[in-house]
Amino acid sequence: VQLQASGGGSAQAGGSLRLSCAASGHTFNSDAMGWFRQAPGKEREFVAAIRWSGTSTYYADSVKGRFTISRDNAKNTVYLQMNSLKPEDTAVYYCAVKRRVNTIAAMTSQNYDYWGQGTQVTVSS
Image (cartoon, rainbow, N blue to C red; front, side):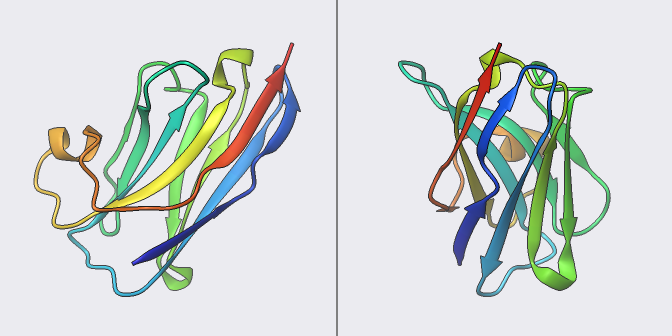
């Protein structure tokens, strides 16, 4: 599986951006796709995740209510709509695929199987 992330850029605090992640190669209903981010000098952290099937989504507390993860199975693409952006959302954002996910813990862990290149998001105050 290859992942291509896009949609990063700059925004003012309170603004919005939408990230996209297109997956090529075969994906399965039991897979999940996640978004992670890494700010300068900080460790990479989980942001959001969604299964390829069903409606289950999961969010980090820091983005809950502001970010929305969604998917378009026909396009093999997952999106991250980011609203009410804050300067602390500034980071490089990565998308990733995890095979055969069975638990919430697995979906929210860092242990994903395939990773895309990052896309920079910069939020100014």
